[in-house]
Image (cartoon, rainbow, N blue to C red; front, side):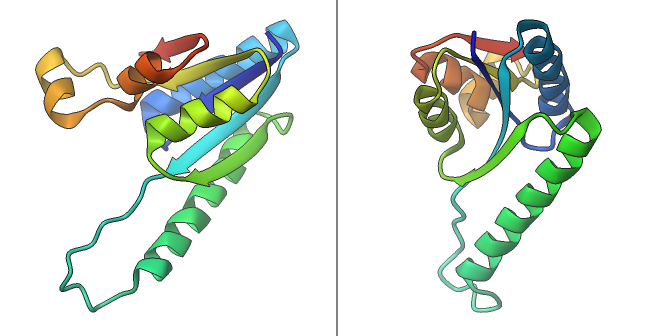
Length: 137
């Protein structure tokens, strides 16, 4: 395996997955990419108090800062990438662009009913990905 892609969103589960990805990258001498996906923002039509552009810019800046802090904690050998889009689809898209890539994602471990109602990025990545995916709980 040449590449590892750790998808992080700031949750404890994603941070646990990122730490494992760092260990795997070191063990296999693979390149590590930390990816934070900022999902599309939908505001009600009567939200004149702020602009969507300002919210998106703030979300992107917060994601970049979070990855910067994570890199400092985990080690600077990782590449940090922030993308905007639907999380699962964007994770799979980035992984597909990397050669020989293992995707590492965290899972909150919700039961089947909660996952059905709330959705699960990890579950969706597993189903969409054409390569290996490791789900960390």
